[in-house]
Amino acid sequence: MNPHQPDEQQHPDQPGRPGTQWGAPPQGTPPVPPAPPKPSRGKAWVTHGAVGAVALFLGLGIGISDDEARAEASGAGPTPRVTVTKEVEVPGPTVTVTKTATVTAEPPKPPKPKGPPTTVGGDGEYLVGEEMRAGTYRTVGPGDSFGCYWERARNSSGELDAIIANGNLEGSGRVTVNKGEIFKSTGCQDWKKAG
Image (cartoon, rainbow, N blue to C red; front, side, top):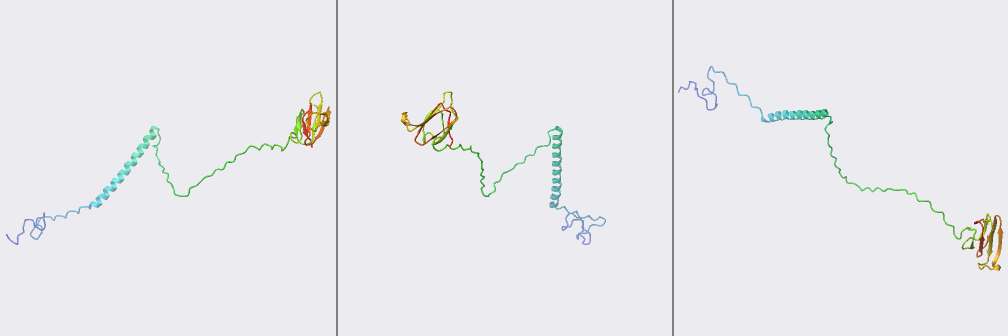
């Protein structure tokens, strides 16, 4: 082998490139351009991911628009949306609410007069101080055509000597009675305390 003659075999330092021992290409052969660099895999993922996200977004938007258009065309209206609300207890003081109600009480009954009554019937026998008060009483007169009889007595024995005073009225009249006496009335209208 001639050391000055070009070697047609591949040089071991440069695989895939024919040339001389020193790597020069044979004459008349155009130089081979270097292979373009391969793109980084990281950039490819970003590019493909962005394109995929845009496509997904557009697809969802079109799908929602189509669903709403179909719902409006059928007269059903837009698709209802559900909102879920969760109650959360917030720690804090306990609040007590007190309600006050106003109740109107029934009006009180008029007090009963203390002691014996101040009005007595026109027919009856009364112990003054227990069944009627002592004082002056007035009547408008007889309750029927037979007249009005009244009597003051020391006791209820019915004896003539027990009578203190008596009288017959054809019109109105007054009688004053004292505590411990018996007052009798027959055929008269009610006697009412006048003083």
